[in-house]
Structures are given as structure tokens and as C-alpha cells.
Image (cartoon, rainbow, N blue to C red; front, side, top):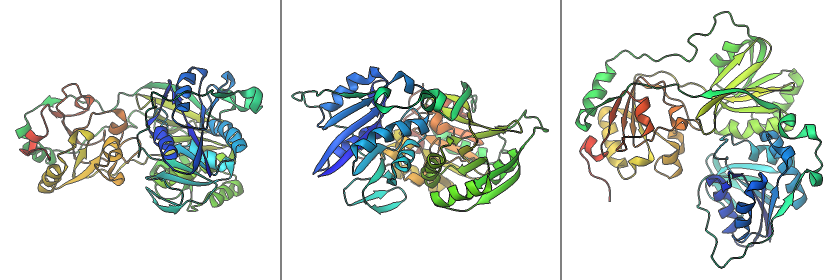
Length: 464
């Protein structure tokens, strides 16, 4: 019998879609015993009790006021102390929480447990799994992060709830300065509403789209730089380590000396950082580094800022800016302690091409949109929802958890316009949005808008 522990976050009393997928993977696998642990406030007790009705052996709620404000590193430490006592064969986690979007806790938890880490699972079995970056044999003990590949079942009306095991710090025994805000190396210094990328939208007819695309290609490419208004004589830090490819320009912008290290394992990277005595480390934000950087941070007991869109320095310290609260605000973050670490999103290269962004609202029209794209010479991109629902491959994803693009013309097909997607497209030259919902946010960030069904744009019918 395989023992599985599923770590979930109960955000405002709800289990996130990625964590729900992880729990369903465990529950639907035969010959397993499933325990669930959640570090959540006491207000999540009702949802924790509901989870006991799904067929789990035990539901553990880790809750203490002392844990409030814990960052990902401290959260992983607290979870690890509980999971260690359970001694599971496999730990399943959702790839990321739906509010934080950092995807750091699973890798940090694996490092602290001394378990192998397998990220981005697209299926789950006890012998072998397919992930976004390859196929792996399941060798226990291991931690596996699960993509949004299943829907969590509903409890049967006949099922009875069990008692939830509640664990607080009197049981775990952390010092007050080890947990909560005091123990967390990453600190939010300030936050502000994200208003970047707003445009004045002119609404047009569906029949005008192809002509607008042609005209836009003949316009000069002009976007506002994020660095406009910054002082030319700002001070830089002395040294900065870049792990792997990319980010050279970003690094040179904030550091006098840039050191590049091409090691690819956690052992290699940690050893180099310790030998060099370097205090500032950045990784390009991609699938591989989003798994490696948290493990490095966990081993070195360092804070890690995830998916940063900008770095800033006062000459002594680095600061990172990243979208937070599902992208509605931008937070300025510092890493306390000796080591600053961040995964940084590299801005895409400006190009003279056309990109068609496929949203979930384009479901049913994909072949026709692809044909239209081929006719006008457009490349394809996608929103996360379109990728998560299998409409488009992961490598086409743009936005907060995808890539950044800067084409001359960007056409958004059935995209709602949430900040998570706009982060990757807001520096496009001309933006054309097509959405039958006149209140869709995308129109606030587009130059031209079409409030019609997609089928009217290319004169094509929906697949059946």
C-alpha cells in the first residue's frame, strides 16, 4: 500500500484548482492511503471537514497565529516538519496556488524533505508520469507537482465527515522568529495598483480587422519603456550572478560586474554560490528554473522572489517588482538576510511580425483562426486558460506564467484580458481585441476592439 500525502492550500475557505487536481490524482489511484495536510487559518476548518468526506484517511490542518505572514520558504519549513512525521512514499502538490502563482513551495518542500522532485506532471501513476519537461519514472520517496489535469470530485451526500486533526506551534515547536513575517526572508516593501498597458480603444466592425492588421504593419513600432523617468546616474551593486542563459541586459542594468554560471544541478549551483561568496543571484524565469531556483533557495535558507518583471537597486541592495494578488497589484519585494535570489522574466525581443493570441473564448474556432493566421503570416500564442484546457501547447503560453512577446501587431481572440495575460503582451505595437463580451477587460488595453462573435471576423462557422 503506497502512502500519499497531498499538501493543499485553503485560500478563503476554497481549495485551488491545481491543489484540487493533486488531491483527485491521489484519490483516484488504487492501492493508496491518502492523507491531506494544509497550512491554513482556522477559518478554513469547514472546508477541511468537507475534504474528510472525500475518502481521505486523515485531514491535518496546520494553523497558528504565529504562522501568519509566512513566505514560501517558511511555509515549506512548516509543512516539511509535519510531512516528515507522516513519512509518506509520495507527496503531491498542485503546481502553484491560485493566489500566489509562485510555484515555489513544492520544490522547497522536496529539498527540505530530501525527496526527489518531479515538477509539472500532466498525468499521475505509481510507476511513470509524463510532465511538461519530459517523462519520468516514479522513484519513491518523491514530491510531485501536479498541473490542472483533473477536477476534484464532489462529496457523496451519504458521506460522513471525520474529525480534522489540528496542529499548532505548541506541537511543532518553532521559535517565534523562525516563522511568520519575522522568520520570512522575503518582505513586501510596498504595493500599488497595476495600471500599465492601458490604451484608448476604437471599436470597429469585424469586417475591418484584416485591413486594420495591414495598416498597423506599416505604422512605426512605438511602445513606452518601463524605465522612462528613471535617473541616469543611479548606483549599481558590485556583483550579480546570473545562472544559465539570458538576462544579460537586465543584469548589466543593475550591476557593475555580471558573473554567469552555467551549472544546471542544485548541487552545482549551491556550491558555486557558496564558493564565490556572491550575495545576489538571478535566474531566467522558465520551466526549468522555476523548479531549480526554489530548491537552491531552500538549501541555502534564502528568500526567493518569483517571476519578477523588474529589478531595482539603491547601490547596496537589490529589490524586485512582481505582480501579486492574481496580478491586480505590483509589489516591491526585498530579500532580508545575506542572499538575494530572484527568477526574472526576460522581456521579449521587439519584432515586426503579427501574433494571434488564442483565448479559451476561441474554443471551437481554432482551425479557422489558424487558417486566418497562415493567410496573414501570424504566429500563434495563447492564454493560460487556453493552455490548461488543452486548446494550445504550453510553449505558446504568454503572460505571468508564460513568455513575454512584443510583436508589431497582436490580435487577441476570445481573451478576457486579465492581468496575468496582459503582462506578457502589453508592449505590443498595435493591439486588436475580439470578444463578444463588451465588458471584457481586454478592451481597456487594446487599440481596436470588435464586440462580435469570432465567427463574424473571418466569416467562418464554429466547429461541431
